[in-house]
Length: 183
Image (cartoon, helix red, strand yellow):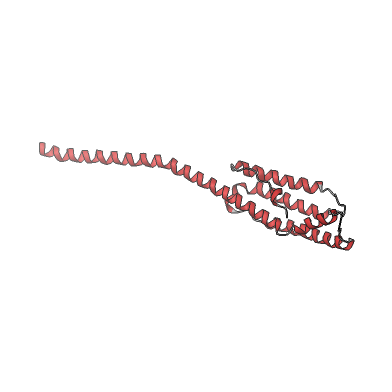
């Protein structure tokens, strides 16, 4: 009888050990799943922050690539001394108008990166305001030395506010595009 009990006992022990070790493995898996999820969330957050900062530079580069004629016109018409001739001012105004239209066109052509798909609507709304700002500036260029462009400035401010909200939601400091979009 003892001979029959020994194999039965060994079989039961091996089943018990196997069952306990598989429970330990599933416990370890359950413990690592939240860690993996946290790491994945942190990685996604970092990817979004990196993409936002890269996209900020892309926006700034896109605008600065063509906006120098606008600033040249504004500076020239405000000069007291060595003021350009009326013909030169007229040409500069035409160039500034073309530059503002080109900036608006280039901003409309910007594509929101896939890493920012979660915020695509907000970013696209902000870009639309930026493009409108330059379209409005092109339509309302004035020969007056101290001309104000309230509508254009409001649209630009709206662009900055919308982008600031995206940055703050991502845990970043809101940028000042106005400080970077100048020549």
